[in-house]
Image 1: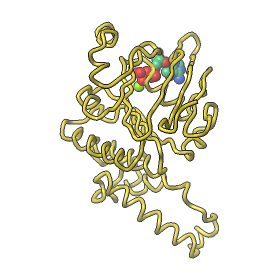
Image 2: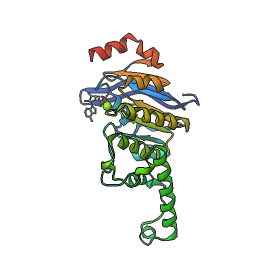
Image 3: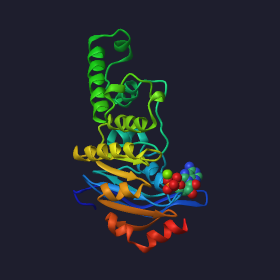
Image 4: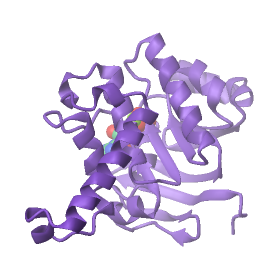
Length: 255
Ligand code: ADP
Ligand code: MG
C-alpha cells in the first residue's frame, strides 16, 4: 500500500506509556517533496510521533513504511542511516566543540578509515578528513554559518545553534528531515532566516515534517497539516482547512 509519491506511510500507531496513550491509532501519510506540518496543543503527542518515526521509541502497535522499508522496531541508527534525520525540541549540540566539529560528528558515518589509519594519518584517513571537512563547510555555508565554523557551539547565539543542528542533521544526507519546534524561542528575524533555510532544504528535494507552534510559519510554508489532540488525529488538510476546522479551534481553546 502507498503510492510512489508517498515517502512515509504510518498506520494505526499506538504508543502507550503505562496508562497514557501518547499516540492512539494515528495514521500519517507524508507526500514526497512536501513540508508536512504536525501541530497540536502541548502534550498532544507530536514529539512522541517523531520519536516513534526515528526509532527512539518502539511503537506499542502499528506500522511505519519509509520509502520501501517497514521501519517500526528498527534501531534509531538504522533509521538515521536509512534516510530520516531530525532535530530535537531542546538543542542537543556538543557545546565545547566548534560548529565545524559538530557537523563532522554528523558526517561520521561517511568515514571508512580504520583507527590505525587515522592515528598514523595515513593517506586514506587524511583524504577522508579533508573531504569531510569540505562537506561540513558546505553544510555550514548552506545554513549561513560558514563564518562561525571555528566558534564553540555554546558561544553561538541561540538562533544560530538551531541552524547548526539543522546542518548536522543534513550531514546524514537524509530524504526526510524532522524538525521539532525549530522556531521556539527565536526572534522574528531568526524565524525569517529559518523559514528561508527550510524552503531551501525542500528545494533540494528533501521532504520535511515540521512541528511548530508559530501558526504564521505553519500557514506560510506547510503544504499539508496534521493536527493531534490527546494522541489522536483530529484534523488534516491544507493550512487554511485545518485553521478553519472547529475541532482544531476547540482543541486549542480547551487545551
Ligand atoms: P507534545 O510534543 O505534543 O507536546 P509529547 O509527545 O511530548 O507531546 O507527549 C505526549 C504525551 O506522552 C504526554 O502526556 C507526555 O507526558 C507523554 N509522554 C511522552 N514521552 C513519555 C515517556 N517517555 N514516558 C512517559 N510518558 C511520556
Ligand atoms: Mg513536543
